[in-house]
Image: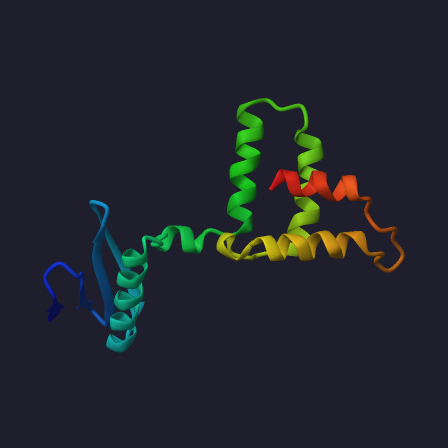
Length: 141
């Protein structure tokens, strides 16, 4: 069964799962939307709206989280044999405590400011981080 509007993408059912299919900048995208046809229609409308605004990031980018960014950064440090790798490990450990499993899209300027504020304030039994330390940790991300 297919519901298609030419040029605007389509939704279709495969087994018990509804899928969304659309094209953007010459590439075809397909996303699962679950067992609900209304959810598939809503997802297609959302993606078409994002495309109309030129802000479509796609499903892969939406699923990227802090741990993925961390792995990419550490791979770059290893590939380029950077001497500052141990310091980056320490900074990433601190950042991971704060951001945890946050999606990459959710790590905004406001969240970075909140991190800097939290690190600059004294925690129980610990001294607050100095501004230079906080800047260096943020420079890693």
